[in-house]
Length: 316
Image 1: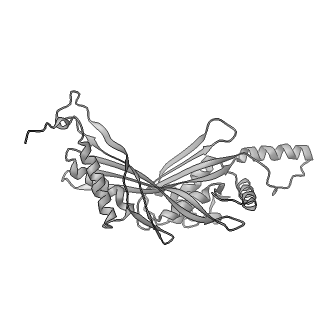
Image 2: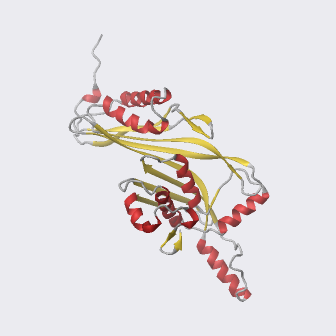
């Protein structure tokens, strides 16, 4: 057999290390999860890669793909669960790429769940994105340590509190302060995208993250709405107006309130993006924070959830 040149292992002309070289847009059947008693096969979109030392010209891309496929095979054989897929891939990447000290994996997969409309109680099928991320580092003794994260992304809605209060002020001026405080005055609304990804710890549940995100918005969205439902969704959103800044803060506060025993060094990444209805631009907010920092803000409210959660005397 003729010798096949290993061009990737040649010394590069410019010996600068590369932080990440990765394959993106990998799509393979990624295993099953059980939602509401039903098995659902997920087809994640995966990004996976490694670092490259200064004396290595290129990565062996086939090894990256092999690491991904091998890891998915393990999950599909139910040797590990889908929630472990990112960390399995990260470990396998370093095993196959011995010149690398760091590997990185991110994946997202779409799945569905059912909820009921607020008035007519119709069943409606809603979409969520499951997010996973993992990093692996090779130590001096060749041991591999991984950090893995689980998250979700959903769609909700927000109602602008500023426009609502300006409208109230104008109406009160025109009517001699006769506007009832509880009247659902109009404001502009946004379709709002939220995501949270959390470093894994014992007891972390996927649908707790969905509940945290949904309850932090002005209201949920529904694929199916009858007229009575539509009116209720709009009124409830107007009664619960929020900036994206309010939403992203509530997300991290409610998450730690739900898991008061979460280790202090757990990292939380929360993001919100509102698709503005009266502007051509959009608005976004993000928080990266450790659980211990959130606990110091919560104080005596640790373990308190939902409508009973109060921060410094104000409803969260």
